Structures are given as structure tokens and as C-alpha cells.
Image (tube, rainbow, N blue to C red; front, side, top):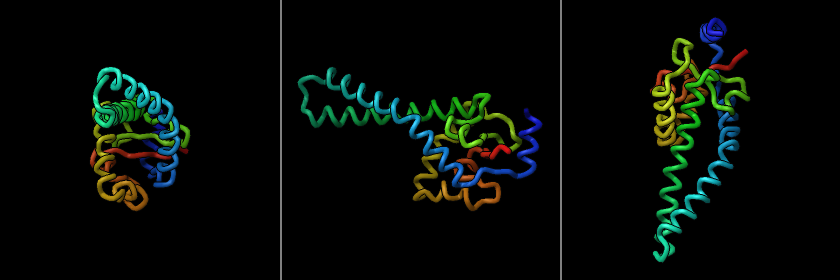
Length: 155
């Protein structure tokens, strides 16, 4: 299997912007149901713990806690999946993509985590960090450059 990855890396079969965007849409759809359950459950628990408080305060705390839990859910989903033997989130797998280091090797959980949090930097550039995946030589987004990773399109 690693020979195939080495061949893909050497043949420069990098995944472009649109394949990556499609994979992200699939991943967001997959995460939609767990996110809704997490948000709803968080709202109920916060309301129970803050019983008797002002409703606007309950909503504020619930949104904050749900937001933190949502980031944790996405981080664990992407980092675990991309560091796994699949080397891809489910959306990337469906699109025939794989995330590797610069030599075509599987990512560590730490590198996959860094790549995930680097996406926030890509977003803070008015999304230019993501658009870079369509313009750079290796089709790397800003977070890929920061984490020294590649996204490959399997043949």
C-alpha cells in the first residue's frame, strides 16, 4: 500500500480545491446529526443546571458550551480519521482522497490535530487559505503548508 502512495506522491496527483470542497460538504453532512444532538443535549443540560436564571443568560451559556463541544467533535473526527489507517475523513474517502505527510506517510494524531486547527488560520484569511489549494504547486491549502501535509487524489 505504501508503494502506491509513494507513486501517487511522486506522480504529483494532488487533490485540487473542488475535490476537497466536495469532501468537506460530505463531512459536514455526516457531522450534522451528531452536532444537532450535541447542541440540543447541551441546551437541555445547561437549562437544568441554570434553572431559575435569566433565559438570555441560559441561552448565552448554552451557545458557548455547545460551540466548544462542536469544535471538539470536529477536531476529534478529523484528527482521528486522518491519523487512522484510512488517512481520510469519510468525506475524503468518498471522494478518493488521502491525507499524508510530505513523504506520503500516515499522519500522527498530533500532526492531524495541527492541520485541523490550522484550518482556523485558513478561515481567518477571508478563506484565502483554503483557496490556495487551487493555486499552489502541490495544491496545498495554508493549513497543509503549516502542517507539512498533502492531500492526494487516489487513482
